[in-house]
Image 1 (spheres, rainbow, N blue to C red):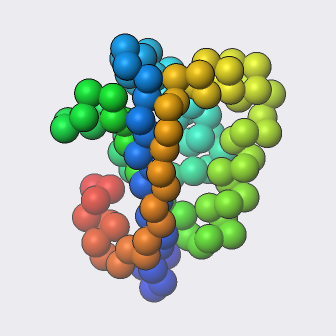
Image 2 (tube, rainbow, N blue to C red):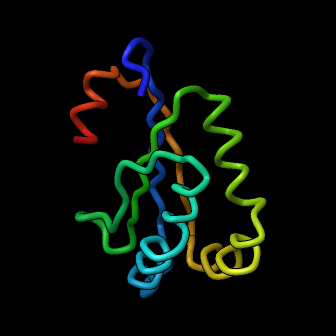
Amino acid sequence: MDNAKPWLLEIRLFKVKPGSREEFDRISREGTIPLMRRLGITVLAHGPSLNNENGYFLLRAFSSEQERVERSQSVYATDEWLAEYDGPVTAMIEDYDTSVFAADPAELGRLIR
């Protein structure tokens, strides 16, 4: 990571349909998160929300907004996503929100140690 410039952190908060969070987490751990990492996305954390039984979060880091958009779009264009995850994952999501904010490199370094 470049310690000279801020990184962008993206947090996605998903609201999954009741009763689907365990399967959503399994697909994330075994499939979609490894796919993102193979495509060069830095996934810092993900998992079920502790305060919402239908909540799930995904925290990722990017070097720029352009990288965030391009790498995110690359996931959804893969044959793997389209064949294995698009239908099941989309069917489990009721809603989601994305927030992007700048992170000091020193602080980010502490997060990923």
